[in-house]
Length: 405
Image (cartoon, rainbow, N blue to C red; front, side, top):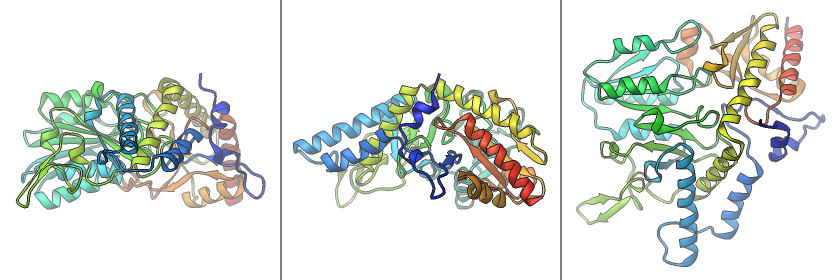
């Protein structure tokens, strides 16, 4: 079993108290996670001991930096069950999705299927592709429980469908989508599948090959790693469908004044000097999570989520969104208080007890529109959160309701 109190000792920020002596209760992990000492140290070590470029120098220090950088790629690739040659380093999930959106060749009338629960990062690029290339967008709706209405997918698929792109886990409802089932449907029809795994790779065991997707994207900063680094999995066999979106140094094979050829994967998708420190830090984060065990991470977050759903359901005027069964949701709980603005609730939670939550539409405005909401308060957990923090959250929420009643 995961011991959150032991885990908390590894996160320096959790030992810092506010001026009034209140410790940080950080419940905005779906936005970004805190960083353990091992990740911080790995980045500092790179800058202090071998801060040189990779792949280019023949001197010993450059060889060492390259070895550590590519070893980082191997560890991260193993974490999601793929080959290092299939793992492209990017800035974040958003960039990864855009590389697919603009790297594929589109024809007028091609169709992309996505869902109404997507983060803007997996919606706006497809709107741009629609407007630029004449591609049509189709959307899978949700049920009243916040589950994806997967039964309607077959009605949306046509001979024109080129790609299905959807989130693995909703960043608002916490819904875990049946991506393996969708992958089987996509394969039968020769449709490409992109999975936005920004909210799944940090929290549940993810094996991209087992899922059966063609592309999978995630960000480092949501999984204990640094900002500015993420990954795009490109399944071997589809890489030639994806042309480089950005070009320049490093990703080329040969260059003349007339033309250029591309390097092999994954370097052909990584122009310019990479985020070396970011890759090293992300590998350290992967090591940390692997040592905890992703099954343990998932099990512990289930416990936190289940407890939160029960506690919040006992508070008058609170409405909770998304599946109630933790088998179908991750550690994200979005809620509202009747007649109270979500931002007011979030501000008072912070003011009273140093509780950090997110409020607003969480870059998922169409989903809120679908639910008839102008915004929500979102609580999201990670490995360092505790049941005691949930109690403080719920007790403080009751005080907020009394104050603003």
